[in-house]
Image (cartoon, rainbow, N blue to C red; front, top):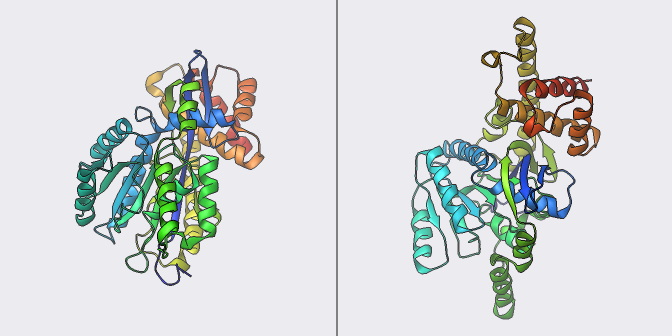
Length: 385
């Protein structure tokens, strides 16, 4: 009803997965695919590896989010974006990445002091692109022009998540949409699906006295780093080594659209380039059209690659002749592994292990271009079988 009345915006959750690699406190090197069936501890470490600003995941997602914001601003010129960071160090690093990407210095808010409130108010009244904040997502952060969000924090309480998404959903006019970029973390996707089931979560409701005080107390608790999270970080201290990002899918109204794609490719662009003004009843239809176009882009690209391989065979002993860099090979392999895992139901780690058994060679992080290509070729045959 809230959507039909034009009171809240439709929320598109753009989910990003990726291959993570880190070293534990004991010196053991580990790797996992963000979003696969991992233990709670592995998920926590992979998630924090993804959020590390020195890796490739955060810069790739921020570039995609800025691209999405540019598309929205074509029709909503004052639309703004908010990145929610875990701590001050990360917030400053994210701001530096965004400045390099967009050419405009973001507004950075590090606390809820009076100066921070003034900064938020100034941002709310401006037309600048990005606001980067540490956890500040309570009702006091009221910036109606926020349309694009990046959930770049390890906070995962239901109340905090609901309040965070609530920053983006209040409609100023019919047709505005909200786009929130999420890491592919099971508890976050579960929370997103719960919000999808109750779209009017962002509507103000009258609350007085004890009810209001109780909600404020819960929000204060949700915005503080919880002791369990701190203990987890301490117990499982680790060093992030590498973090690759892949577009995974779009969640909307309980349904999934799209398939894995490397950031910066036409396959991802189909969903970043959605119109900034979109009638609620047309969202499903357009997402289905974009999914079909994404598939056509993928098939056309793979056909071109296959043709190029036939016309100009690659000699793996000549680095100058390689048609992809080592980084690109890893990204492509991880994307194919994710796609095959979704088709077959096998865990990503099992798919990687089977590829190593059949093709030989070390783990992905140490494999040569030729070794990676052999796995890519084998997996392509399976995916398209």
